[in-house]
Length: 241
Image (cartoon, rainbow, N blue to C red; front, top):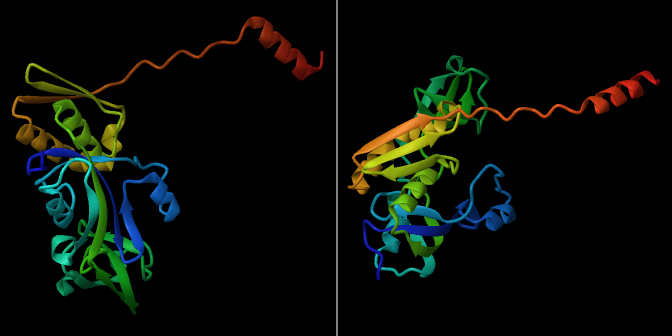
């Protein structure tokens, strides 16, 4: 059956500007392009078509296609990261920076991320546009499969928003219970996107009426003590006796 808005699908893709790849779900491509991140999770991503989980131009190309279809789509700036907005380029006093600003440095000012494009005297020119604003993008994509199972849909949303695969959960009698790894509150990406994840679970999974999140700490495994004979032997070797 053709892909429709509201369907969950597993998708692989590679995005580029001209000959330069800027994003990919392929580990092999990432290595070939010199952009491999050992901390990243490569492989198909689960998205809900129509929810803007990928850029609009790529998402629109999926509607009407079938599982297994692949192809290339050219995405204009207005359906990608928008046109370059001149008003988003601001002059800021260098005294507001923690360190001396340099051209190309990425900075955060007033909860907005930008890049320093010029430094003149005691002022720095900062561009707060997305780095790909104003660019026409090309995506090669493949629709790997539809995702019908609600648990797999939730698992896909967790990975999509947080990049994590170590969050366990179960759904029972309308309650989704998440077992969170220790120290997850120090994960900035989790803290930023947790609310969106919960909102979309309620929006897309009509049978879920409650979400419970528990931070779980497990007793560490006891360290094995070496046998007494081994301790005596080691001490003898150290003393030369």
